[in-house]
Amino acid sequence: MVEFKDNVEISFGTNSSQFDYIKGNIKELVEKFNFNHQQISKILDLPMNDLENLMNNKGNISNEQFEKIEKKITMLNFGFESFDAKERTTILLNDLITNYMLSIESLSKIIHVEEQELIDFRQKQLIDKDIELKICVNVIMLHFILHS
Image (tube, rainbow, N blue to C red):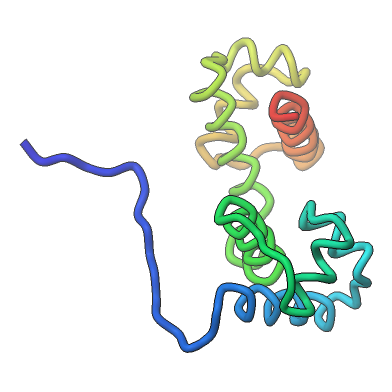
């Protein structure tokens, strides 16, 4: 029987260190979005002192911190142009259904839309723009609340 893994690890070799990689991406964010260090610190959930140490080749970050920072930087730099708001909402909706074992019926009651409207949204059928907006906003808020 063939076994499938849930995730894949990709690595690549460079002459630069983990710190150089992160520093370069942080600098790119600063330039691209005109962020200051306080904003970067908050966005990356990295105390100002740790951020300054990182940018000055001092200190240390754990692999877990590195992965979290890398994910956030990647999403900020590249992640939002590759799929639209309805697709992102559908991903969050599917996460709510899978991880919280919520039914379409219960979700439709929670976000205050008709069950058929939610079914149509998931099946990418054309629905009223106001209903679509309501589904998107409420699913995003519900996902945020349950994951906080």
